[in-house]
Length: 508
Image (cartoon, rainbow, N blue to C red; front, side):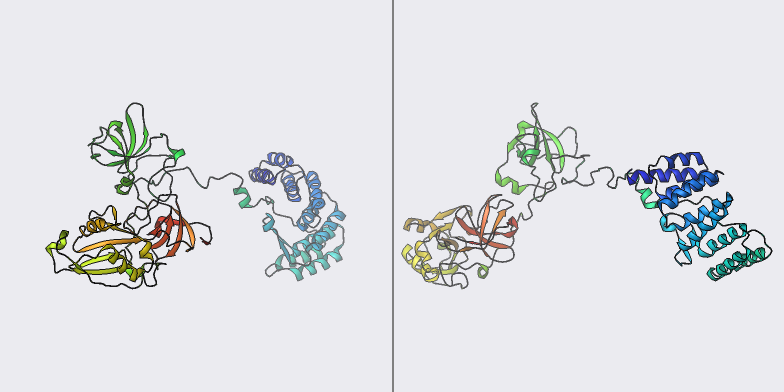
């Protein structure tokens, strides 16, 4: 029998005995195959309560047979032997009980489940009672004198009275375990009989979508880092994703919710009836499919409240010039800024309105060149100027400049391109980029990182990549920015847009 089932029947039998249903308790205990000594002890105690000493004796015989060191078992069987007038057997049981005390003044059986303390003086008192039945009065007085030695404080009255009765050759009544006391299973074991639901019933207490009124569970909302974009296997429609609303829409089932034109919504599913289920401003709604236009890649960076954005929608503060990593093409290309003076004629773009103001030519955080109003340097002169600061990198580097609209780079490959470049002056300033595609060959790769979010270049020196791309890290610019290489391009990017992989350093 499994221990769990044994504890269950044991507990049920004790409860029946506590209720006075002796037969039910005996039936439950009898249903336990190969019962341990404590169960047999309980059966004997129940038989005594039922007034059946002969059956009780057989149960106590099994108790001491299964545990021949159980002092309380011999003590209780000695009492039954006296009830059956088997005095010699009773005297033997009391001697056995005292010997199993092992010279201890008492044994507390509480840890075994029996709320009773068996004292040595009680065993000696019952021994004297058996000796009185055998007319061994002198031996009984010696035994009681021995019991006085083992008695605890405050228990002298009963022993003094017992000595007087033996002196008058009167019988003593033996002691026993109080009626109604049984070996009981441990409380913790009983409490663990029934399975408990420690987690309770599932209940949604928070949602990744603010102001969400949905109740229950839904596989479309994984709690993951980043904006709300379920995995492909969780979507119910292949056309799910972000869409832009072409015109204003007022849902009929909501008086307060208004979907304005050009708003971004996330479409969960599109039905054949021409309606789509979407999420807007943290709430679900149904919207006509005819009003939806696929959103561009840049639209995801403009998502309004209700859908969390990536951890760094706005990159960290741009780097100071002296924080840029060293360029392999020049010895002082990144550490020292240099100022040089040229003359530009007041006939190009905005320079004509401020002939006395200097024009600042910034070579992408590598070097700052101040060109005085006057003569325009030719392309060879410009490269010679850059070569003094950048070394041989300027000889083979590709020159480009950023247009005034700030969106595209214009290449500088001839005098005509150079003239166009000067026309892009804004407030007397121009940003020039000198990029060398071979400058990073041979540079060690410190480690590799995996792009967690797509990054769109914010400047000519930024490294643009998509989510899932592997990035080779060439240097750590500062706590927020890294220099890396991806898809044959090299540049800097915010560190928070990627996570490091377990790959070690390599040399290319």
